[in-house]
Length: 475
Image (cartoon, rainbow, N blue to C red; front, side, top):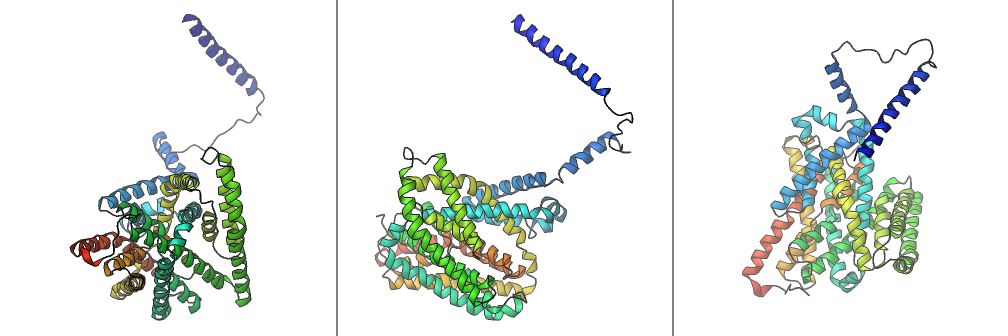
């Protein structure tokens, strides 16, 4: 015991002696004019220390870390509270984003909001949030089960397309009186009307799937049909949105036609070239039933390359990420492992940043006076009437009972995160003014929040009249 102690002591003493000798020799090399150092502060040392500590919180990295900590904590707390009232955690995270923005924190403590979310630091938060949404759209593509879609094609196409066409027309028609009141002056009506139509038509496929899973309906007939309908809805709506973006961003019909042609060509390459290659190559190199790190790197590289290409040709990067997820091999283990890896990082970390970024852009305070709130109520009513009503009537025409048809309408009316993604695209393109953006965010929250209570009410009514509905026993 003594020998190691003596060796250690000798090592420390030797280090001190040698370091002192080096510093003493080095002091002879310095110039004749002594180093003055930073200008001494007239304040007390303790006050100066606090000033230095506060100044360190003005650095970009420090601000970003503060933002991340605050966003994740508030998002998890709100997600937990909403789970307690039988709502998906994602709704709580959406609300958390609004609470951190000018709609609440900016009112209660403008100084805290300005310190936590300064304007000059928003670009970094935006980039991180966009990265999260790209990964999320890739996972949405992964969740689509193409064989199930083929088996449910009749009902899925009928219900989903009715759930797109009806709200699209109602949204475009409702944009007529809104155009002069709420649109930005230099935006043509075609851009405003088309975007309002597609914004009314979106269904949140991932949120819908989680609601069905939490209620034990994911393997019931209505659950399988609803998932298939939402999947077809997502594919169709995002394809239409890609075309709308191409038309809006182009300077003429020839440029729009070129963008659409490039988009269709890219979709064809992904589906007919990349997908068969992925089935053969990626499936073959899966190690021990689980993807290796090299395979994961290759898959994520493909997702980001696809996103890069669609961004470059004039539509959005999200569409490319969605397509990359869609063309992944149908191997259930591979897709499950990919989703788990993405959700650990994206859902728990990056998506709350997107919600916060959306909340910082949502200024509910702009809705001043009863006229603004009346317009907001009108937007919500049109959205519900188009999506809920159109999907319910189409489901009824396929042979479902009124109760099951109403349940289908309630599920398809769920908008959630997918709607926020589309709204942010419209905001970035300059189509939506801050005021109508806030109204549409409230519409997305309302239609998503009402899904679970409405399903519970319909289930209660169905139990009281069991002979009048189609069986929904698990298949």
